Length: 86
Image (cartoon, helix red, strand yellow):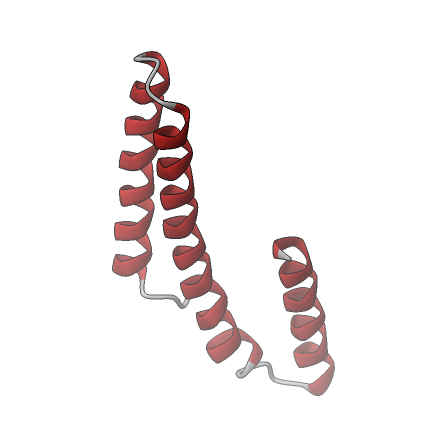
């Protein structure tokens, strides 16, 4: 993985903390909208981590592919991943 590992780890640990908080909110029967807002916040953090990983993939893995065929395969793989996100 060529992404900034420290940044990705920080984001993932933040999301984990948020999810732990959401679990507690559900257990405590907190207000639905408050829970939903926290779910969206944790999704945003995970999306940011994913952008970091995918950006590094483009900049390093795709850009440094040795042959045109290898580069095309990596581009196709990237497009499939983006399709899942969208």
